[in-house]
Image (cartoon, rainbow, N blue to C red):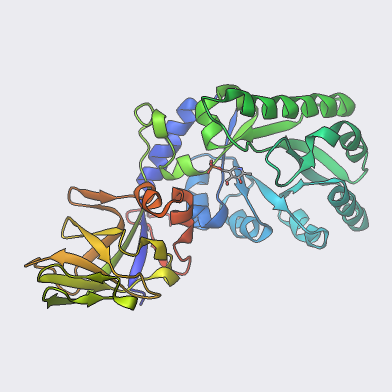
Length: 373
Ligand SMILES: Cc1ncc(COP(=O)(O)O)c(C=O)c1O
């Protein structure tokens, strides 16, 4: 039995879905981004739940994620955001998955593989409008896209891009990307004589750039209850994931007692130290050494000493009453006390995304109160 586990509040996910839908432009599809095990929440469980809620589009990064998702989302569209290998084409076709085509060489290789299989492969083209990551470079789109559109075994159905930054005080930056994207869309649609399914926005653009919703919005972090920022009042999302473990040992120690590798912390006065079975190998980032907090008996207890691979020590204070077996909350709520991924991210100099996706996927995910999962 593993000593730490993750609890996902399915009602929080449903609540978030409902709020997000209320902000969707008419005709725009909500496309939950469920890569990295649905940001640590569990790909299959979240996919099944979102599908039961009527979601008809999903996005993942890799083929293996799409294959895991397919059985639980029926006939919903599954878009693979990364570049699939031509050798995997039979799997794409068999499971009705939509790949992203990232450049002309990739397009030709997929076209040849589709030709060899005797199929016309539905694809989305990915345009790099300024992210500098995957996709056809926008400045070459005018020459390259018309050639790609003529490849006989690719059925161009959609066009996607990704914003590098959506900053309300520098709207031109995202504006330029949107403009490049819309130009490419017009060019392709004219050549093809039909509409393409266009998507460029993820969570931040969904909040700050309502004109960027187009045919669909690829939303990740907001679905999981983070990232609303200045919109938190209008959009009271709920974090859905709690991470818990139990105290495995408590010791009452005197002042000047050393804790952890290299004794980077010493007690200032007699206190109760609790050891919990979890460390950086489980995804509790080592930079939280002498910085993090956990909740025990409804109180915040600081992480003291270095986070080690499998154990951490926390200071419960004198006469704490803490006992081996007590529940510990690493992320979540206990009584009136709370600690969430955005707070830990602030302590670590990172983002909630990294905190959530670092939680080891081998830890058990529980879905209390969800009969479907
Ligand atoms: C291409 C792409 N689209 C959408 C998303 C979802 O982003 P967010 O979680 O900020 O909504 C990501 C996440 O990294 C992404 O890489």
